[in-house]
Structure formats: C-alpha cells, structure tokens
Length: 413
Ligand SMILES: *Cc1c(COP(=O)(O)O)cnc(C)c1O
Image (tube, rainbow, N blue to C red; front, side):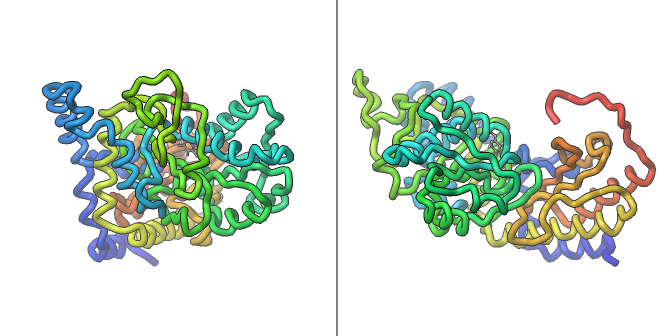
C-alpha cells in the first residue's frame, strides 16, 4: 500500500516541482480548482503594478503604441498557439469564451451557408450550458431554420451527423465529467459528413496536449483563466486556421477587426488574417496578466504536464478508492487515459455538503450538479503529497460524517 512518504519521494523526483515556486498559493490550502480559476503567478502582481502605475499612470494613451497594447491580442495569441497545436497568426486572445464561441460558430455556419440542407448544429446535452445557450441564441436570431441536435452520450455522435449537419460543436474535455473526446477521429468523421467542427478548449488548453492543425479541427475557442492561470475573467482565445481565414466572417464586426481601424471609414472592411476575429477595445490590465501564465508554460512542455497530470489523477483515484472504500462514491471520470482530462469527478449523494466541508478544511475543489465533486489537477503547482493530504482529509470527513447536509449554498458553487 502507498504511504505519504512514497508521495514525498515522487515529489522529490518530479521535474515540474520547482515550478510551484512561481505561484502564490496561501499556506494551508490544497488547491484543486485550477480547472475553474487558476492560481496566481507571482509575476502577475509585478506586471499589474507596471501596467497600472507606469503604462497607464505615466505613459497614458501613448501606451497603445509604446507598450504594445494594441498588438497584445495577437502577440499573446502567438504565445498561446503552441499549447494547442496552432501556428503563429492563427490565435488571438480577446473577449470571453462565450463571445468567441458565438463568433466561431457564426463563422462556421457562414462557411456552410451555400448548402441550404445543412441546418443542424450537433452538440452534447452535457456540454457547458453557455455553449448551448450561445448556439441557441445565434440560431434563433439568424432565423434561418437552424436548430440544435443534442446527443446524450459520445457514442451517439456518429449517428447524429448527416447531410443535414452544418456544425459539430463540442467541448473537448467535459467540464463536469472530465471526459476527453478524440478530436482527430471526430473531426475526420464530421468532415466525411460535410460538417465543420467547432471545439471548445476551456478544459483542454494548458491541461492536456492539443494539436488542432494535426487533428484537422476547423475552429476553436478556449479560456485563459482556468488551466492557463490568466486571472479572474481574463480574456479568452479564438483560433481560426490559416486555411479558413480568407473566408472567415463573424457578425461582431467592430473596428478592431477592420482593415484600417484608424482610417475611421464609415464602412466595414475586414482585415486579413486572424485580426478579423477581433471586435473592440480590450480590458488591457486583465489581458496583460495572461502573459504571466503563458510565460510559465514556456518553461516546460505539454508532454511533461500530461505525464504528471495522469500520474496525479491516477494516484487520486487509487487513493480515494482504497482509503474511502465503503462510502457511496462513484467515479464519473473515465479511467482510460486517452479519454481523461486533468480533473477527477466523484459523485456522492451529499456531494455539495462534503465539498463544503473539504473547503472549510483547506482542500478547495468545487461542486457541479448533480451530486458531483470536482477535483482539478494542475501539474504546475499540485504535488503528490497534496493528493495524499487531500484524500486523508476527505477520508476523515466521510468517516466522521463531518459535513452539514443543511448548509446554505452561495451564489457560485
Ligand atoms: C468555463 C467555460 C466557459 C466559460 O465561458 P465564459 O464566457 O468565460 O463565462 C465556457 N465554456 C466552457 C466549456 C467552459 O468550461
């Protein structure tokens, strides 16, 4: 049987262990929620001070040029690109994940507009709700007969694609279960049916290796405030591959996507390339923080991150199943490595109350309906000893029934 000292030995031999020093995490906290809000890179405080005190405070409006504010969505996109298998000039960091999904989906529907038969957007009922809501909103506003087809399991996806399908819109790693789709196989299948794919990488970017170009994806979007540690509400990203850029049109045709924004012309003419995915002025202070997270990824590789991520999630599953045996815990996340993201979800009938008790004891995960306790594993700052200690605290809470099933819920779970 594994012991805590085995976990300490694994930490001693972990090549990523030194990167934990680059994050500011409070003492006494085991942070297993980097899948929802990444921890703060220490460098973010220095960078925020520089942006606010110098660039904004002293240099004022000249910073649009002198501090590179105007170019920042593109420059950060280029830094992010290698993490998702994109080329330079294929990604911009901008707007929110929901808004980028709207733009990517609109662009995908536009590509398909020549075929009047293709009116269906296929996605999963278990997709993150905003993705479904944005698609519903776009479809209803377009008022051209577009409709959503929601499938209940990944196995139903092939049967849901056909000559009527415009877009297959999937979240690569499911936010609740941690299930990871086979991007290459599903993109190929969609293409055989004449459908275009839109991938949401909210729980993939910085969490699992992604190779959009190799795997033949058509469009992608994702979050920077989760595994990429960009800070609360940090702008998201959108990927449009070079092969689609010339045809790409999206309805939020703001001045940042114009060929000559400062010509102040009364008609919209999209710029060439990825810039046409932009809309308007960005929250520069927040955008600047994204770089601090990306700089840390530049010190390692997604292969090394994936190797440790699987070791952490395997260990967590094994320890929970061994040490908390007899409690009504049900593993929701796939055991198969290829199908697993970088989180582990366990259902428990009192999942909300157990998670509240864990958080009160410094083990921060989160809760998602129905009954699911979600634990995110972030190899940049989670240690093997953290995993041991988190399971020990979970075991104590369950053994002693030290949770309050009548606890009030906050607005955010
Ligand atoms: C986190 C997440 C989002 C968040 O969207 P926002 O616009 O940032 O609120 C969207 N989609 C998925 C799949 C997510 O996991």
